[in-house]
Length: 230
Image 1 (tube, helix red, strand yellow):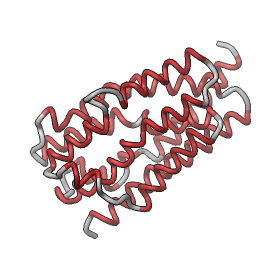
Image 2 (image 1 turned 45 degrees about the vertical axis):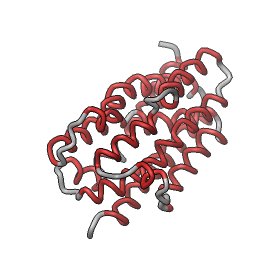
Image 3 (image 1 turned 180 degrees about the vertical axis):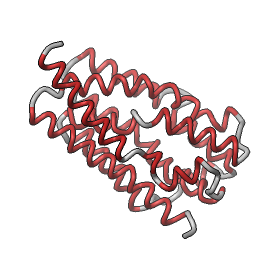
């Protein structure tokens, strides 16, 4: 293994440790979800807020894509972007179907007002992926995508066991992300390892993961405050 490869792997290990420390599955909202302690109304509020993030997620990927100078690496990010956004089964559409399975109308979800914490999540990710160096943007994407497969699986299990939601159409968002983001997170991790060459790169990446994980957990704080009874 080359010195650069060892440096990249060490950086990824440090990032993984930070992500594990701030795992979304440790957040009270998701721990309650996993044991059926949320009300359907709490899930509806969450669904409205999370939609805004799902809708904007392709713009985070396109921001990182635009900041990448290497064609093969851009092509890998483009595959991710296409899977997120293209066609009738794009991911915002799949999320709307989940909302409908909860009993929401599409209009209720689309027209919902984002909480301040939701807006903060979106603006943080847009800045990290679009206005920061590529290493920071791809590290921020990894901080989210690396958690998605397990989170999606736990959410889906809870929905089936405690909330009676087992229609594949209503669960399609979770089914897709339970498998798809395994590959997406591998791509992001490999890019972090590749571009994390210097101490400055490492600092950029770790700072981005710090901001991203805080914003993700703060988003759930806002959902709890607004939709979960004390």
